[in-house]
Amino acid sequence: MELPVLARLKKDLADLKHELTFQIPKDLATAAAHGDLSENAEYEAAKNRQDFVRSRIVQLEGRIRDLAMYTIASIPRGVVAYGSRVT
Image (cartoon, helix red, strand yellow):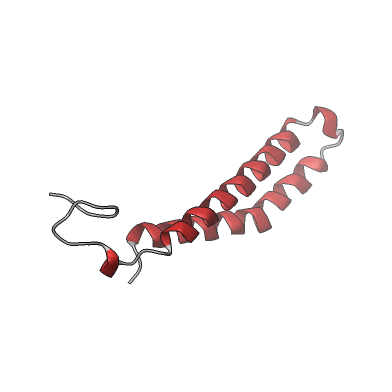
């Protein structure tokens, strides 16, 4: 069984990869169709979003790689440790 946070990160990663592959290219094409790219705010915003999404994907992949080493069974009971829930 994987950690709940790991499942959420994997979903976020899949959503960002989908956006990078499908939505951002459409946004770039639409903005480029408006003409001069040097003064096109929509194009600049889409490029900035593309850069952000790429950076976030790398960050999430690293975090997922780090968290993949842990399982629910490896979290000690009765001790406060990484991944523990304390009430």
